[in-house]
Each structure stands twice: as C-alpha cells, then as structure tokens.
Amino acid sequence: MPTIGALVIGNISPEEFWREFRQGLSDLGYIEGQNIRFEFRSAEGQINRLPELAAELVRLKVDVIVTWFTPTAVAAKQATREIPIVMAETGDPIGTGLVMSLPRPGGNVTGIASVTAELAGKSVQLIRDMLPSARRVTALANATDPFSKPFLEQIQLGGEATGTAINPIRIGNNEEFESAFAAMERDRPDAIIVQPSLPSKRAALVDKHLANRARKLRRVGAIMVHARAHGQPARPSRPSARLASILAGAANGSRAIWSLL
Image (cartoon, rainbow, N blue to C red; front, side, top):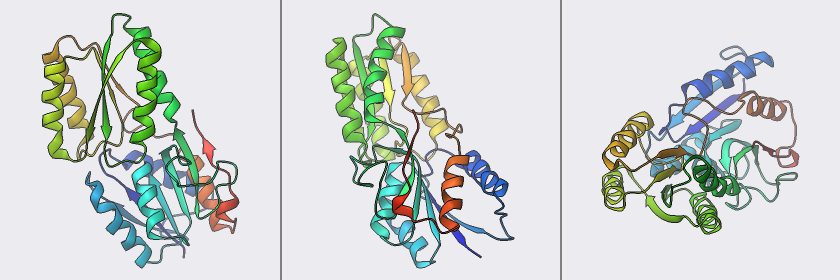
C-alpha cells in the first residue's frame, strides 16, 4: 500500500485543504486505509523544524511527499532527490530553485505554482485603486521563505510605478511580530500587505492582531493578504490528480507545473 507524506508549516490550518485533497484522491479511486495511507507532519508555525520533519518522512520511505507553501517544498527537496514531491500553493518555483522550468521541471518536483512575484507587485496598484489617498504601504514578509525576496522586489517595483512608499518588514519567528507591530505604529502606514507564509503558529490570531493594531493605527485603510483566504485552498483536486498520476507510474520530472493565477 503506497504511503503519502504530507508536510505543512502549520501557520495556517491545513484541515480543509487536506480534507479536500483526500476527497480528490478518493474520487480517483484512492481510499485512505484501503489502498493508500498518509503520514502528516506539521511544523506548527516553526519553519526551522521543516528540515527535520522532511528528513523524517524520507526515513519512513514514503512514496510521495505533498507540500504546502514554498518553505515546505524547499525542505522536502533538500531532504531527497529521489522521492517525488508534489507542491501546492508554491510561489516562484523557478526563482527559488525548485524546478528548472514550468513545462519541464526536471528532478523530482512537480505540482502547482499558485503565487507569482509579479502579482505581489500588482497588489500595490490594487491598493491605490481601492484607496487613492494611500501613499505609505508596509509589506510584512517571511524572512525564512525564499519567495520573500522576489515578493518584496516586486512590491518595491509596484511602489515605484505608483509613487507609493514601501516599508518592508521581514519577520523570521513568532517573537518578532511585536517589534513589527511597534514599527507599524510608529510609521502609520495607509495599508499593509502580508505574505501568507509568515511564521505564526495561529494565523487566525495574527489576523485578529493585525485588525486590532490597524484600529489603533487609525489611518490604516486596508490589510491585504497576498493569497487566498485562510482555509480556502486552490483547487486541491489538481495536486490530487498530479499525485495519482505519479502513483500510476508517470515520470515526475516530465510533468509540467500547473500555474494558478
């Protein structure tokens, strides 16, 4: 019976994603406990735990590793060059070195590229469309996520194109949130852009904290998370279909990456 390893950061609850992911596999004839089993691993918001969790899945000799967000895909690829990896909700897989190209990824990684750096830059224009008076935007980025570099670069370009001042704040762990919030209270931005892979154990609490701080800032007009709403994953049937094709014997490196806009 094949075993599927699942690796998540755990800053956003993966329950709905994995429920729909399992349902997608079930629709394709793979029933948990009958002809497939799962090994789930969560870093519980602590990204520095991902390498050890990925290594644990490799030691368990799972047949495929499914990852959610860029840091988990990077950790899985560093842990194995042989076990197929199916990524979901992954930003800029070419720029972060996960694959050689979207049509022909090569290696052992395939799946879904759902967030592009260019879209992060367009967030600035969207904010200006929503709030024409906005002139100062804070971008909260995950310092430990390789995608944060192109993410912030494109936001800076978006700021230059719209005449908007961008203040990037990089957060590497849960303890750095307070200093980030304090900096925002001093700077009083008109809007905030949030990278979804921020290292928080409880993303819902972070959302609430941001909203509370925004009320204190008073001038903040918008908080934009550069991803789908928490608990609203992107078409989990697609990674399920990709995984099913691998279980059926398809060569992983020859499978094109799906790109979701």
